[in-house]
Length: 546
Image 1: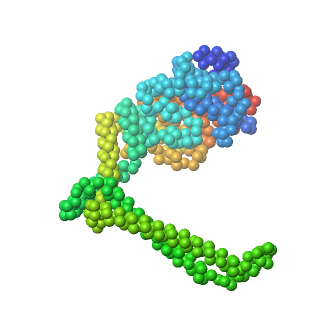
Image 2: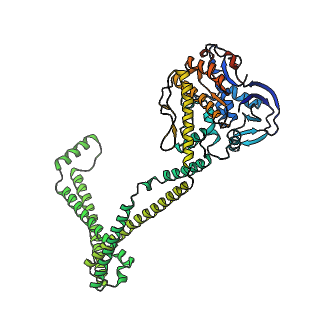
Image 3: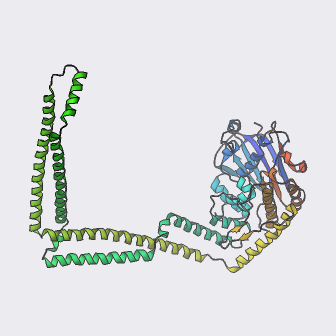
C-alpha cells in the first residue's frame, strides 16, 4: 500500500463543504526512494522538510497541529505561518490507495476521510481497518503508525522502541507481536486488555500487596484472646463484689467517674503551682536589694525633673504591689481547695453509691483497655476484609486470562517468523555495515526486544541501524504477506553514514517493492540521490510559501 500524493491548499474553511481556492503545493510520491531536501545553501534546516513529513503524520491522525509552527526547542510560535494557516483556512490532503484523507490545519481534532468529517478517535478506528485490516481497538492505529513514521528523536534512533515512553510493556508486547505477524492476535489483544486492567488494579492497590495474611490472622487471634481474658476479669470482679452488670456497662456512670478523677488531678496541679508562686513572691519582699533600688531611684531623680516621691515611697509602692498580688493568690488558692474538697466528696459519694474506689479504678482500667483492643481488632479485621477482596479480584483477573490461552502452534509459528526476520535483517545490515547486527528475540515475558535499543549514543551508525531495520521489515512483511503499509517515513537521515546511505538508497531500496520517504539536508547527500528528490525547498521557497 503506497502513498500517491499530498496537496496543501487554501480553502473556503467550511469543513462540511470544502472548496479549494488555491493549491499551495502538490507533491507526488513514487515507488522507491523519495527525498525531501533543500537547495544546498545555508539555513537548510528552516525551510520545512521535517514539517512536510509531519503533515503526513497529521493526515494519519497525529493530534498536535501546533507543532507545524511551534519551535521544538524554545516553544516559541512562528506567527507568520500560524496566521497564514488560519487566515487562508489551509488544508492538507493525502491520497493513499483509493482513499483521500484531508486534515484542516485551522481546526483541532478534526479530520475528513473520503468526504466524511470525523473525530480523531473514530478516524483511527477506521484507518486500523483500512491499513491493517484490524477490527480491534488494540493495538491502536497511532501506536502502530509509530513504526512507519519516525520523526521524533527516540523513534529515529531506536529500532524497536519506536513508541513513546508512556506506552506500557504490556501494550508494547501486543504492538510488536501484531507487527511481526503473531497468528492469534485477537486472543493476544484480549489478554492485553485484561493484563492492562490487572496491572492498573495492582498499581492502585499497592498497599495490599505488602499485607501478610498469616501475620494479620495471628494478630487478630491474639487480640481476640486478650479481649476474652479482659472480659472474664471484668465479669469476675462483678460477680465477686456483687456489682450490678448495668453499672459496669453504663457508659454515663464510667464517664462521670473518669471526669471527676481527671478534674481532681487538675485541681491538685493548680493548687501546687499557686503555692510555689506565693513562696517566690514572698521572697521578693524579704530579699529586696535596697542598695540597687536606691541607686536606680537616685539616677531617675538626676535624669528626670519634678519627681515628688521619696525613696521610702518607692519601697512602700513595691511592697504594696506584692502584697496585693499575694492576697489575690491566697483567695484563688482557697477557692481551689474548696473545689477540690467538693470533688473529693463527689467521688466518695459516687464510689459509695456503686462500688469502692479501688474496684472502680480497676474496672475503669479494664474497660479502657478493652476499648483500645476492640478498636485495634476492628482495624485488623478491616485489613483482612480488604485483603480478601484484593486477592479475590486478582484471582478473577487471572481466571479471565486463563480463558484466553493460545496453543503451542502459535508460539512455534511466531518463533519461525522472528527467525525469518533476523535472516533478512542480517543480510541487509551486512550489506550496509559489513558486520552482523543484534538479533530480535522474545523475552520470557513475551516482549520482543533488541538489546542495543536505547543504549546507543546517537551516532550516524545508530541511525543507519534503524534504516537497515526498517528496510528489513518492509521486505519481511511482503514475504509474510501481512498486508501492512509498504512505506517508511524517516527524518534526520543526514546523521547516517554516507556509505551506508548510498548502499541503502542506491542498491537495497530499488530491489524492494516499497516507498522510502526521507527528509535530509542536501549537503549530506554528496549529490548521489538527485534523481530521487520529489521536493526541494529553500529560503525563497519554503513549504507554505507564506
